Length: 325
Image 1 (cartoon, rainbow, N blue to C red):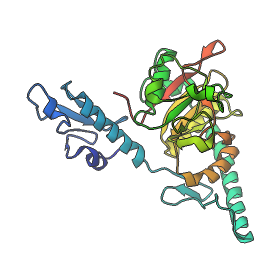
Image 2 (image 1 turned 90 degrees about the vertical axis):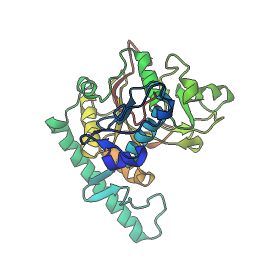
Image 3 (image 1 turned 180 degrees about the vertical axis):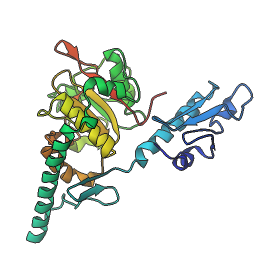
Image 4 (image 1 turned 180 degrees about the horizontal axis):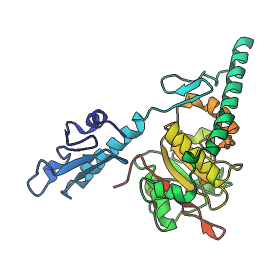
């Protein structure tokens, strides 16, 4: 949960009544049709931070401040992972493995680190899969969702788009081969443009956003990467749920969505970790039987709300950093 101090960096002074609730001057008080009261506008910090005002005329400035507050939540999370004595964190960066080793000694040090991470990740997976406190099947995931997913599949599509609220770039939606030709331009649209489409248009999307006027779903055309997707073809849904819960609750990685693919797997959408983690993460994910291909921002992932066989790809967990209002 965001701290009171962090919240006040966004909202200004707050009259706190407990650790997660307080009153503040409405950011749109000059738009109020009636006289403003000291307790008209309130901020809540538990779960998804929210500013609420009893007046309706100030909806736009309140919505803007809500977005700023929730972005602060996303940016303030301290992501850290320790496996086998190797620490990955924003303050203690992983060894810069994107650069080729300059000496045999450096190469051996890197290989030693990789072997250490691989062994630790395998042991961690074994512990995760037998820990009853981490058990998390789709029904439990749905019950634990901070915000209730939609009742109808089409609502999943609109909620999914809200994960990208306020972000620049174009989202790709399509079949895996819908890329590379001018006719595929329609597969790349802004979030605002996609929001005008009533139903999810295709089975797949990406965790990265693309530059305008792109027709090719490739890494070089990705303009930003807000999320990373975890999935596995080797783990059952229950096992994958336990892994997602461990990364979220134990490793403290913000989990924004879980999608039941309608097949044998679950896809977990996490806030994107620091770029320098990726070489180490590839080793960790492979050792934990997760698909390392999902580290690529242009890799297709299942889109919620789309039909598959006799069911639908469904959103079963939803905790957006920013909510469209």
